[in-house]
Amino acid sequence: MDNTAEQLQSATKPATNAVANAFTGAFDTVSSAATNFWNWLAVHSLWPNMLGRMSGVTRDKPLDISRTFQSTFQIVREATTGFFTSLVTVTGDAMMQIGQMIEAELLRLQQDFTAILCQA
Image 1 (tube, helix red, strand yellow):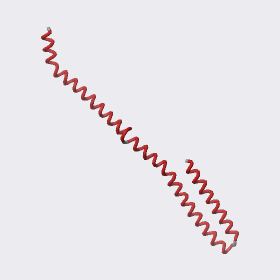
Image 2 (tube, helix red, strand yellow):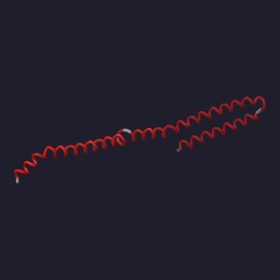
Image 3 (tube, rainbow, N blue to C red):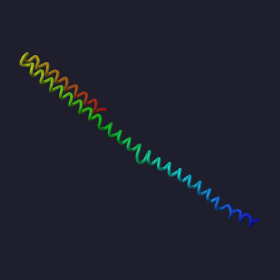
Image 4 (cartoon, helix red, strand yellow):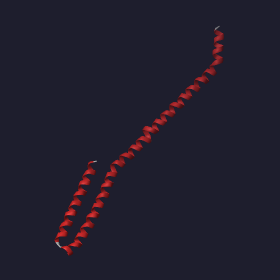
């Protein structure tokens, strides 16, 4: 009986090893694929890169917007000042005072807007 069991074991050992190796190889492949996917997704590429870009945008864009509005306010103030300065020759000091009030108000609006952007 022992001899028969040994012969049976000896005869089936290569097939049993082949099946066991096939399962081990399949599990190793799935495990490796899952690990590689996780590394791509969370460790090396997708999420860190995307979050890094989002951080840069949220850091830089408010400053860009602020600079654009400051430039626009500056242009409007200069144009308004030039317009009212030219009217002074015709209307006297009244138009200069109105121009100064408008320029002061535009400057206040610019400062308020910049302060709001810096708080965000």
